[in-house]
Amino acid sequence: MIAAEDPDYVIKPYIEDVIAFIIFWALSGVVFLQFFTRYVLNDSMAWTEEIARYLLIWVTFVGGAIAVRRGTHIGVEVLLHFLPAGPVRVLRFVIDIITVGFVALLCWFAVQITERMQIQTMMVVDVPMSVVYAGVACGCFLMLYRSLGVLLANARRRWQPDPNKVDLIID
Image 1 (cartoon, rainbow, N blue to C red):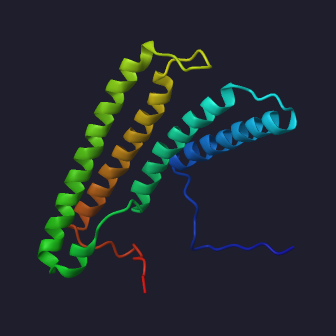
Image 2: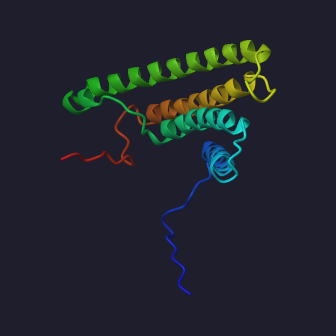
């Protein structure tokens, strides 16, 4: 039996990866159950569509934290390629501060909406809507944690380009 090992590559289990993995497979199970009951049993379960929608919201916001950690959120980087090194460092600093501020504000709004939605319940399942918005808040706080990590890592490098980051090459 052949076992492939790469001693240089280690898989690190990040918390947002684990949460997104679990939510994704729960979403897959619910969608499969919806498909099975609708098209095979010809008697659709009403709660599956609603729960699938809310699980998709959860996985989206937790996935946002993964994108922050990996640096794969969409961004306009044209100025970083054409400006001299000094202004690029200032621009990177400003981008990091704006990002952390925006995500912190997003966290604050997510907590506010979670508290306000305690009185409203889901349409089919008798569960407060604050459960759905708690997933949004969880994803936002994970994004804030990762944004602060990016800010600290960039500060340690004094906003120099990350030597470990591989830029995409577009022909």
